[in-house]
Length: 429
Image (cartoon, rainbow, N blue to C red):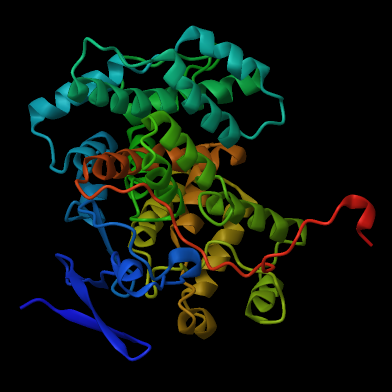
């Protein structure tokens, strides 16, 4: 028996269908409410509004659950690779060995960037942020790689997926090298996706980079945990822009621009900047903890708490273990990492943090991990973007294939002046 919700307005009752998801999530379908009642709903920030039905990612903030296509991220981070996880998100199922091999070959074949694109990189202002550059360059990819009519739609779209996954990684490393004035390192066919990125970032003619499989695994875990996160700001941007039936490059470019914000993808960078602030003020986190507890102080400890997870971020548990193993392996003397350890010790024991669900989140640990690997601070959000690519692609693909597709066009409640006449400029007081 179908559930029905009732809405009473001006003495008249309307029936609204209740939608139940595969994990028991419930929603009231208001898609016909405006037509039937003349009313719209108002939900600033859309925190209570479902924009779509999706089979990609399930998350439960109360129980600390995150699954891709039904598979817990705990299992994927332990057993999978980023490439395999990307295949899972985009195609809906884990690949066979043959399918994974074919997918990896496609990524390798499309990993090079058109040489003419170097001129774009070279002519951005030196102070340009890597996220702004990346968003622009992804949009430009469409001009360099237009659709070919002799290919089938399915073949063309799969090649576009591979181009984005492989070339964005290459462009990120390429832009870093060029910002240093160093020789660009090209991808190698004998290295895996993550190993290739580390090699392109850190290899040098005067100091050849030695692949460390432990660091490769750290990067695999980092990107797997960032691969998708339901209808967050950047994913919603990809779906919204994609609903206008723009090309995938433009939709992904919009996602990158949305991720750039400090309240979204820039949070891991904000963690390191906060640690630097504590260090510059003597290195003692205690005064900053006191400020964080003061409701009259605008200061916030970055990397603590989450708007969705009300118990513990499941990704943070995994990244915490990864972070501790990495720091133990590197045994690196870094005062910022020491401050981070002390902050963590307080947060997991202090009653204020526990009562307010201010546990260290994934941004806290991922910021530390990226710093320990050697990723420069202004590329932290770029690293997030590379990891989120499979999610953006899968969300775009799902929305394009949706038979109930609609152009996204939110409504509003107008609160401006009522109708008034135009006043000639000489008559205005």
